[in-house]
Length: 124
Image (cartoon, rainbow, N blue to C red; front, side, top):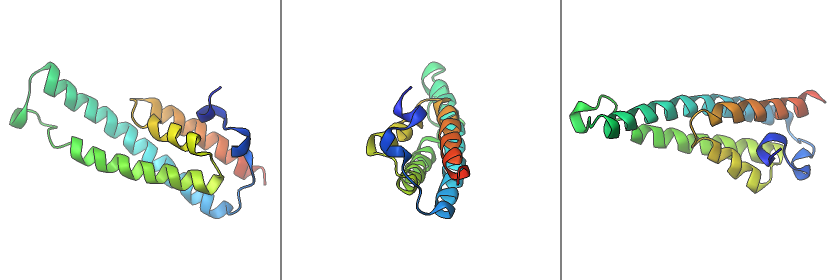
């Protein structure tokens, strides 16, 4: 399994502040869901733009790419926040961040991350 799935040995250290880690996990879960949905809307926008030639005012989602970019930046912050709180390595954080760029992958990675972090938090 990959680092995103299981975490590396260095990612299994003690979580110092469980309360902060729980809050960071909740923020991450919300942002992963929002980014996942937003990415699907972006795909629809791109299909309308390029596959149907609905450009400019004809495309009802022409406004979506810029807000989606901002939302993705918030997802990056949520991922880094969680990663620092639970002791992830930099490659692990980057891998989770990149999951927000692939349609449907953010939903799957969110479940894997939540399961792993909740398991670490629940074992105390």
